[in-house]
Image (tube, rainbow, N blue to C red; front, side, top):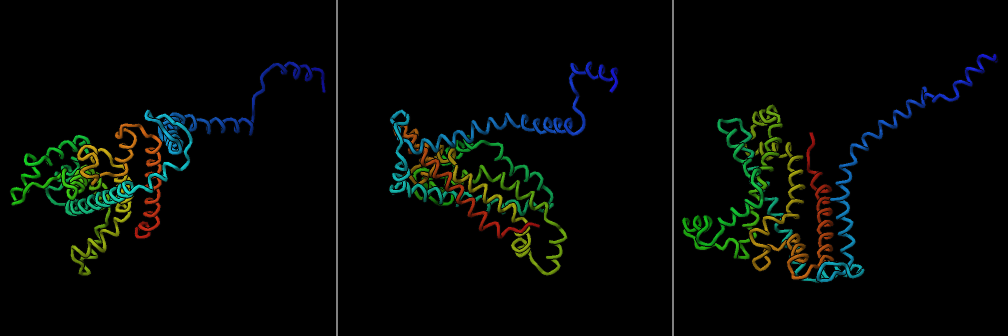
Length: 319
């Protein structure tokens, strides 16, 4: 080693060393992996703050006793859950929730198919009718609830006037326990029918015309083609509608609260209304019992979704 080379190396000791080769590539790769994490960080903060933290808080409160101001008074274990399931009123609430959910999903699906199947035909005027069917999507549930409440007004509302035109008397749309549930389901179906028809029209537009023509050549009529060809081909969309609208029905609050508030005689007292009343409507803020009911609602939604995926998805044809 010469004296000159030694001097050069000694002069390089104070200079920053530059990374070369694999080490430089590794550092750049880490930086590239860090950018997606930083981009997702704001959304992650919102998800934790508004989804996971309320869920954890609800689980905590469900095992707490509360005073009249809603403040935790101590750990009570499963007492809030036990008091629910021994109550006949709570079992009635679960039954009403199930009836409302099934009725809502069935109404949206049946009426949606009755509207979408004719509109799927390429005929003159169907474009305007498609746009008209989507109008309920632009109306909020609160506004629609006030409109329907005016329609259901005794004697003065359009509902009783139509009934009188056909020879009927006062129906009691919101005051009769036998009719109130139908009235609430009608509002929920009207507000959700636009979205349902939109999905069905998109699915029907994707059905191959060649397949339908082949079925017609084999002698299949309109009813057989709809039952044996169209419905199986759009079964993924039907399955999606059933799952999402079931969850929506279990969580529905606005329509019921505006029209009946859970009445008359608790005929429309669903689980979500029960959660609201327990927390805010009983004169005391029983957040512990209300949180326990919220956890039960979450478990019901999960259980129904799992059953639907295990049972109904087997009937779905993906092609």
